[in-house]
Image (cartoon, rainbow, N blue to C red; front, side, top):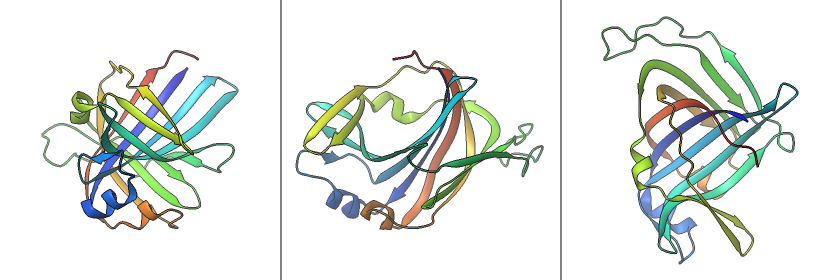
Length: 188
């Protein structure tokens, strides 16, 4: 299946993040992350998934604790490609220019990723064993997937339209980074 993935991490007050976690999770950094994926199984079957998570250590592993997942069609997630900044010069680069903006909207979140024409990696990849997913008392750990495609850094803007969980109420201190990447994920 084809995956277009959009990642954004932001700094938030660390003690507030720690207060969200049970004793079995150690918060690694004052960071919250929004991960959006457009997943295409075939030309007639596409859905969008949003994950909201924070970096933790638990059970001898370091990774992301998934605080909440929303997935279409159960959650209405609209997205569109916009021509807001195409061709604008990327600040800090002599020749890079911005590309299209991908905007995602739900009743609780609006987020936009604009490619800036510069590619690289993600520093968290080297300190990430995978993701912890909670379902009541059950914890599932999914190992990180290898993504060999280059990540294009993005400008990112977002707004929590409505706080529907405590983590959304923690004030944003600073967007730390964002990127987009497209790759093929083996089917399950």
